[in-house]
Image 1 (cartoon, chains in turn orange, yellow):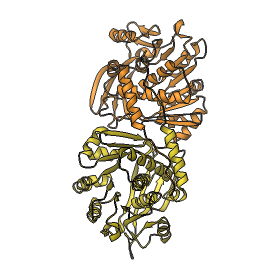
Image 2 (cartoon, one colour; image 1 turned 180 degrees about the vertical axis):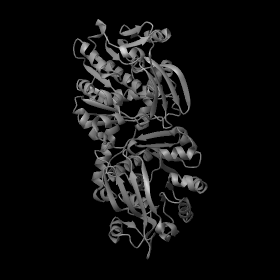
Image 3 (cartoon, helix red, strand yellow; image 1 turned 45 degrees about the vertical axis):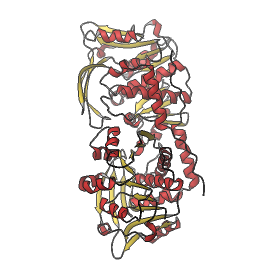
Image 4 (cartoon, rainbow over the protein chains, first blue to last red; image 1 turned 90 degrees about the vertical axis):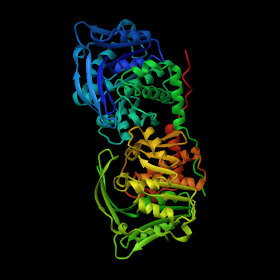
Length: 310
Length: 310
């Protein structure tokens, strides 16, 4: 295996000001692995579902060469369920309901074939679970990327910082970067967080794009202005999946290539928002992705000489 | 004259989570003309102040070759005063106090030398005043840029849309674009607003950058991540001043050059936020601006080929 992902595989109920979806397949690892599957066919997923999880979706994932040997199916149990409602600005949301179900008993055991993978994506999940996965790797992967959320900062900060200290790249949103660092300025927040261990910090800002900090440099990637944002759920995970998938494919961890990976992740995330759940990710092909990447190139392209003196 | 600006010249009291300024010089036309003065020395200002307005600031403006023949000084009266408090995110603010004072009697009369200017900046102000200035131009300027705010959408929408229909470029923030159009998606909002008359729409998003829509194209300019944002007051006006100043200097209204003008405006706005009031704008020189523009170039620079097929 080349890339291992751990995270939730779940059901979501989603309400936005413009529509709702009652029970769609979601979960961080679902989005991550579907996005990454465009770039690698050596992709293993570590998670747990109940027996209510649809076989067709598992077949779809296998059809994309996502290895599911690391996905435990618990008999007689129900999958993790999350319900949320987006505010009018679509950048903030309230959690309406969380049923942990099988997630309560997730004790990941990595298949032997997974333990030597050079790329590891720690999707948003209890940091104790993230740590267990990291500990089972036979050697330190070439690149570990981690996502997390404010919930773990509130409830498990000590364990969380322990895991953060061990990863190469932390990818969180702007509010989370501010909370984790206690700094309002994202520049200062990045300084503090990079002092906690990671080499790079990616700050995801939803419809406002993403920032990459590290090696004393900063890069800003826009988000594509979309005609309709149907459902932002999973956009951050899709971003992460495209990001690490591209890095796994290119095996180049330079700042220049991380910038490309951010554009690729942003392109995939933009598709994600166009439909509820993973629907849009299942429709697109490599050519669609290439076309969208070109839109990003055009979106920020400008050519300026410094302003000439008088 | 090459560029005429109408807008407020005023005092501000500003509170942020990180500091406060009791009574500093502010006002849309102040920021616009100081920013534009880096690019043209044929710059006229149309506004009104009371006799409390500091002579030293007027001297400073004259020193930057800002013509003040269009600035009325009302004896025995007080200048417009605004007080506001920024929220923690520095992107939203509450107005604490507004004393219109001389602004109540602003009835602009353009000096003869102003009426043939090819560039006109209608700073945020009562649209009736903006319309009066536009009506006094001896011929239609080559380029009219307009700023406005939600207050006028709430209180004078009919007059406002009349003025919007006559300008080339409208520059407003994202919340205002959504309010004016009734559309949440900025892409749809831009479509509607461009249908109201302007050829281009600039959507200012504060720390999240700016978007340019028009001619079926879209451009995204980042904001520079700053270590400390001391005071965002006037950043939008400074942006507008740099934007139209650069266009007046280059006399090129192509989409490519509008993109450059947005980068220049963004660079100037980033300086504005580093101190209270206009302080920082009075410190910098052309070389500082050039260096900052280079930071914008580096910030968004990436080089990506479309992702190769398997």
